[in-house]
Structures are given as C-alpha cells and as structure tokens.
Image 1 (tube, rainbow, N blue to C red):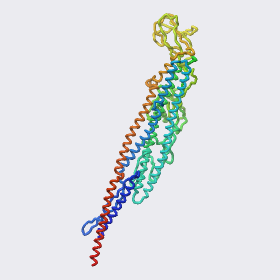
Image 2: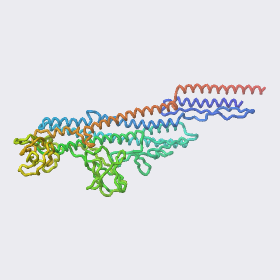
Image 3: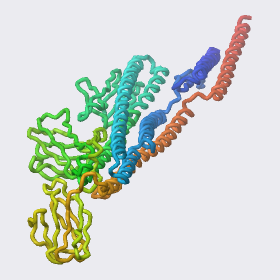
Image 4: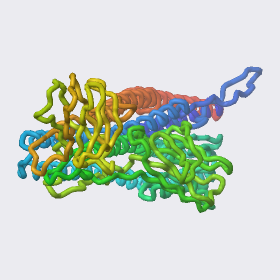
Length: 632
C-alpha cells in the first residue's frame, strides 16, 4: 500500500514542479534573452516485490534550459558579422552623402573654377573676370579644406565611438567574470537565470567585437579576443584600452591591457562594431583622403607648371598659382634609433594614392604598402646625393637607425587640407603667351612660324629677343637684336622643332634666303589667351600613371570609389541581416517560449496532477477499508 501511495505522491510532486516550470516560462515569455526551461522527469528505481520488479514512481531529475550550444554560437557569430556590416554601412553612407552629392563634391568645385577660367579666356584683360577667377580659386581651396575637415571629423567620431565601445566591453567582461564566480560557487549546478544573463552579455559583447568562447563543463565560460588574449578567464576580467597610433597621434587604436602594458590589436579584430569602424577608417576613409590628396597634388602641379609657361598682364612669366604641396614622413613612436627621413617629390606624375611603411631590418631598408604590406621596389642608396627613389618619391635617410625602426611615408594623405592659393593679384594670372613669334614683312618665301611655346621657364635667356634668319633655304642662324650670332648654321627641316633659350617654335614651308622670324617677349596688357586655352584643357589632360589618368579622371574615380563602398556595404548589410535573422529564428524556434505549446503542456500536467491526486485518494480509501477489515 505504501508503494501505491508513494507512486501517487511522486507523480503529484513531479507534476507540480512541471507546472511551476511552465508558469515561469509563461511569465517570462516577453523577457529579453530568456531561454525556455523544461522539467526533466526521471523514473524512480524499481523495487523487487514478491518476485516482481515494481515501479516506485517518478522524480524531477533536473530543470534545464532548452538550449543548443551550436545554435547559440551561430547567433553570436552572425551578430558579430551583422554589427560590423551595420557600423561600416552607417559610415559609408555618410561619406557618400558628403562627397557624392553633385553640389558638394570636389569635381563640381573644380569645374566651376575652370568655367571661370574660360570667362577670362574670352576677355583676358578684364579685371572683373580675373578677380572672379581668384574668388573661384579661393572657393576651391575652401572646398578642399572643408572636405578634409569633414573627413577628419569622421575619423575623430570613430575615435569617440571606439572609446565608448571599449568602455562597454570592459563592463561586459566584468559582468561575465562576476557571473562565472557566482556559477562556480552555486551548489547543485549553475542556476538557469545566471546562464541566461551570461548569454545576454555574450550577445552584447558580440555586437561590439568578435571573440572566441570556451565553455567549461560547470557552466563558466572563458573569452578570448584578438589573437588569443584572454578577456575573461574564470572569475577574472581583463581590460581593453585605446592607444595613440604609432605614426599619427590624432588617431586611436584598439589595445589589450594585460596588466604590464598595452598591445595594439586593431588589426586582429574582424567582427563587431569595432571592426566595422576600424575597417571603414582603414579601407575607405583613408583611401578617399589619399585620392582627394592626389587630386589636390595633380591640380597644383599641372596648373602651376603650365601657368609658369605663360605671361601675366605685366608681361612677366607666371608664378605659382597654387601653393606647393609637400609629402609627409612620420617616425614610429617606438623607434629606438635617431635616424630621420626626408621625403620629397621626384616625378610627381608617378605618385600614387597610397601610404608606405619604411622599415630598417638592421642591414637594409625595406619599403612596403602600408595597407596591404606588399613590397615596393626602390632604387638608390638613401643618401642626399643618391636618394631612394620609389613611385615618384625621393627618400633621404639620416644616420642612426636601429633595427626595427619604422617610418610612415604619406605622399598625398592630408594634402587636400594644405591646398591653397599662392597669388592674390589678378594681374598675375598668366593666360597670355610669354613670347610672341612673328614674320617680317620683307620675307619672300611662303614659310610660316608657329606660336612660341615655352619649354623651360627657368632658362636664363628665355625673354631675350632673337631672330631666326635663313642664310639660304636649307640653313638658318639665330641672332640677337645687336646682330650677334648666337648659333652656328643649323639645318632646316619644314615643321621640325627649333629650340633655343627654353622655347621652341616650328617653321613650316619654303623659306628664301634672308627670310626672318622674330621671337620676342609679349607686351604688357596683351589680350592674348594662348596659355589660358592650354590651362583650360588641364583637367582632362593625362598626368598620373604615365599620362593615362587626368585630374578629371581622378575625381570621377574617387566618386566611383565612394559610391561603390556605400553600395557594397549596403549589400553586405542586407546579407548579414538576413543571416542573423535566420540564426535568431532558429534559436527562437528551439529556445523561445511558445504560449500555445505552454498552454498545451499546462493542460497535460494539470491532468497528470489531478490523476496523481486521484491515485492518492484511491490509495487512501483502500487503506481505510483495510483498516476497517482488520479492526473487526
């Protein structure tokens, strides 16, 4: 009879525990991060009665979370990827709005400047047109500066976001360490609520940075970050920090604090919002800054070079229109040696929109792409007389380098912020030809002379007035105004270049003996626009990449890069959102509370509870009847 009663009682208690578990599920159906629980009923050990194995009822073996470790890991991994994509896309879309707008991008400002140059060409002596050209130049300078400032502003925002993320990560790590401590000291296994809290914190951590989770059998979890550095180890939490960039103190990098120092781990994180921010800064923002700097450099160099070949309203050679730009070399903050690096432009047309790392291995200097690490070839020895030459740069290195010393070379980064006008006097705009070429009225042949083209504005005798005099139809000499012979007899070929004193012309046709052509300095106040017309064509003229890439092409390429980055990041975000949503749906289908299912279980265990109560009632009636029979 006792076995009968015990069976009913065990079923009653088991059903009660199951009902309590179901009620907890229903109560937490809307609780964020709650994992559905279930009571695991276990059959009691049988007993031998009268030669038979008789059941002894049931008990609750455990109340466990309905959780799959693999699905949980998939949610965290997909969260890492989605958070990275979201962070990257947010920044990319902002940059696209900043530089992709036709009214705001640099190409529009450049076009306005050259449109005004066309107005000067139509009326070269107009002071109003010249002043307006200077105003457009100042507006272009301002636009370069504004974009550079906005790029720096986004970079500073990334620094602020990085600091906030590091603070959040450290708080999460401390919380995980505390939960580990409580789980480790909990009797009878880890409490389910602590495991739920642990899972919520891990998901929050996945939103910030990628990590590796090592779960222990007792429910505690260890977290590794970067290249294996522990963030949480049992009940101990380590910290992340920010550190100044080795070459650019205005930028912050992610660092790991092991208690004895800070290790830069920025290039070792690949997931979470931090990876998105740092990836955007390194892959897109810095690249756009370099491309913008290359546009500024190309515009400055091409315009100044051509401007120097023309004459201004005073009849003088053109000076620099834009201020010259300079490349930057920065020493690593951890350099042990005293060597310095001097960086200058050699062949500007060979300069590329990338940064470089210069490393001393103890014997030789090596040059690598700062982003990809790919080696870049150099010639020369790095001395003043024989500098290293690489991709348009000339590199001079002083003595005192130590093994491992590094320098960052930036030929165009930040150049946009230094773009500036060099002239303020409208009369100094050199749209006229510096020299004029004319035929004398006494010429008897049919030969003609082309416009004089300046090839070397620094030539000492450039402005000297000379005459080309034909001794006979096949030879000529060059004389000054005093009749001094400045050259020996030269053979004549129709249409061939005649070069002298930094200029060249072409004489075409059949000259006769005594025919003359004069090359003289253009008069002040000339209405000539020869050089201005050439200046107007500069945006579309090939300059970089062996003449294949123009300033105009650079602007279009930059806009394409920005648009592509925004489009790619948007597509990646769509994919990662879908993957994360699917992972969460899979997890929810297993671990989430389904109220209809819980209602069905509630009825099932209610019936079981009532049935067990009935068993106890029947057992009690039988027991009372038995007592009545025995008592008679």
